[in-house]
Amino acid sequence: MIGVTRTILAKDLLLELRTKESVPAMTLFTLTVYVLFHFGLDRDSLDGELAAGVLWVTLLLAAVIGVARLFATEREEGGIDALLLAPVDRTALFLAKASGLFLFLVAVEIVAVPAFDLLLLGPGLGGTMPELLPVLLLGNLGIAAVGALVAALAAETRARELIVPLLLLPLLVPVLIACAQATEPLLRQDQGPEDLGRWLGLLTLYDVVFVLLSVAVFDYLLED
Amino acid sequence: MYSKGFKPLAAASVVSLATALSLVFFYAPLDADQGFVQKIFYVHVPMAIVALGGFVAGGIFGIRHLRSGDPSWDLRSYVAIHLSIILGVGVLATGAIWAKASWGHWWVWDEPVLVSFLVVFLLYCVYYPLRFSIEDPERQARYSSVFAITAGVFVPLNFAAVRMAESFTHPRVLSQTGGSLPGEMRLTFLVSLLAMALLFVTLWKLELTAKHAAMQLKKLRRRLDARVAA
Image 1: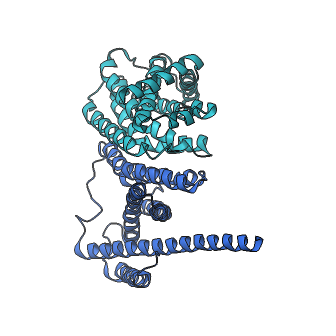
Image 2: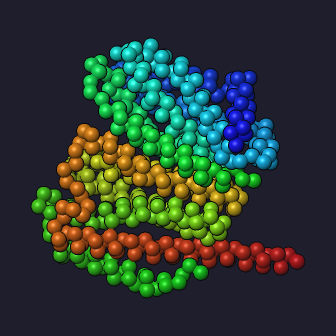
Image 3: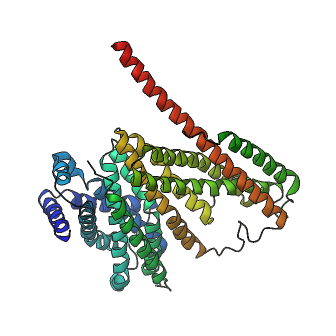
């Protein structure tokens, strides 16, 4: 199963490297949303709650684009039939799609987080990286697990473009709560007391539940 | 098929609803702080509990559908979620009225139960576009069940997350359900809850029967058309 997962993942990464569809679009989108927030809030620099909220809302909106594109190439080129005809375990397919999305999100954040620091953030990210990193990674894991599930759910519907954001964003509310609350003290002017462990715990619980749930129900999606 | 025991059930819900309403208006004492408007509590809270129960039941029916492949479980899941969404509109409306009357605002963000209910409600509203944008009936049933299970698991997780976010800044002093209620209020509340649950099951059975009959009718029509054409 690990071999199959790796093969599908390698195929998706190669496809992304050659077509450059998802990651550049998602990254560009985050920068656009920063500009929108700058004008929408009419603020030159943000800190604390506002900064954490803007950062995480932007990342979640960018994730929507990635999720909407997750099965796009397969569907457009008809590759999905070949993938489903092949004796491939659906769990392997889920793991490959989820890890692909996870890596896309990491790639986006490598640009989007420093860009946020540069464009909007008041206090500067300098010393907060050791705390910020686990929040980003656990957040990405939750988004990737739920994202792959939602992408598969929406793949066979007529109203895909509608279903993905409508389904994904409410499901990610707990991720937004945990990530924004964990990030908020790191982005304050006077870096106050923080309660990182509590929010990382919530994120871990969410990730475990949704990875297990997705593995359990993925067999029933993309069946035929 | 679905209408077994419908009449006694309907009678029981009429009786319990009547009992609940008379208890609310003639037996339960007026609330010392909020006065008469507190009586909306006997509608709002049972409705919310029954709606959430209906959502979770929809998820359990979804599991049974995936396990057995029997489309009747999917129909049960669909009708349970459908009715819970209708109750959900009632919950949000009565919640807003209560909030306006007792806190002076139509909506308050520091009430974690209300906020989580809104998130859950928004998620379940997507059930309709998802279900009805899949044409193949077998696939429609399967995908709807997966949605029902996912959303059913999401409900408690979301409540925990929202409560954690709010209780951080606003410690909850007064718990609204059970615990701190005086005896008469508690009895009235429990009867109201029972009445609402019975009403839900009655409506659920009614809707199931109606949907089943409509499907049978469609099948018969098709057969008739085929015979006339021949």
